Image (cartoon, rainbow, N blue to C red; front, side, top):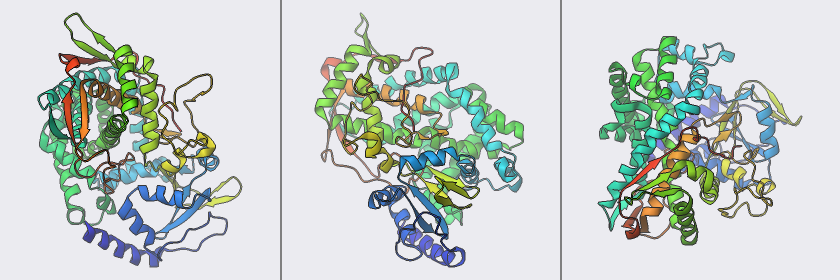
Length: 508
């Protein structure tokens, strides 16, 4: 990919000469780099992690700016300034990025459709926001229960397959990717799920894992060949899915998205294109999050032992036939250490960098001017390790950080500090489904298997091209030897009780 990166850097250098503008002294201070293209090189090399690296480097600045392609990127490293951004969510907003997703990620090119999708504040039809509002009720209450029930029924067979590979080596990240893909998409799309075809599963991950050059939207079939080819193959599969009325047998989530777009006049192909990008919401963060939870638990034997005991005592039911059931509802209600550890791992491992677009000149705290057309970025790692919020232990791993007690009242709202699930008012609507899925899978894994990394618990290389994920997706293999724990032989299943799908999760 270096040749593609070089091409983009050269294009950026030429563009910068034409679009660069003067710095207003009221704007946040600009941090330097190699003239014109230095920050772009950093973004291409490190991906979204680049913003977190800069936030740590300039830790003395609560807010600062970068010049990239003549556009100002304002990086926020102070919870108080982030709160000011949240108070100005009408003019510092996520909405324009939905339009960019449709055009650059999904590949929708019809001007009328793009105008229909565009936010109303910019003169569009506002369909993107209509779709977002339509899906929110499908991720709570009984619709969430039904997705959770289907997902839970799929977890045990996926883990059962590993029993046949006892004492063998597997790629842990690859296994997490396949397991989460199967469980998430089956629960969403029903019996005609396009991802059942291994070629479509691979096509999606080729699209998702190589997306960086695709976003340039310049000769994508050449410049971003692997990502573009994967996307187009997945689009064809979804066109066939809708033609066969597969959405009528899927979840309420899938049906609501189809109905909203179809009623607005989008074609079958355009709906299919948008649905391929829906896979990013379902999978791009859930897969690496699952991997990092397993990685951190098995790399900490004492913590692993404690969590195994908590699960065996509070979340595992043994029938008279020696059949074991993992109750995800019990994990939510009676496994505080696992739930706290899960959130601490998200805090510790996240490279989240939520971005907002400035639609009108906005003054923060009567001091910092954000000009129309600039971008605001919130480096999640810097926020997640901020001592103003987390205290002197902010940089340490503390699995009990999120346990509520008389001495540690861990609020579910950490304003300006915990941005893994997004930044209010744009919070991930699928966080409860993803949490159920990850913790159900993790519970069965840690109880049923021991795990030994072939090359030790060394931090794996991160895929900087997978810019859709904020959870540091792994590049390449992470091989481990799995050993079935003899005391847990027998049949297993996983369940979730009705009306218990909502977790007490911290949000920013």
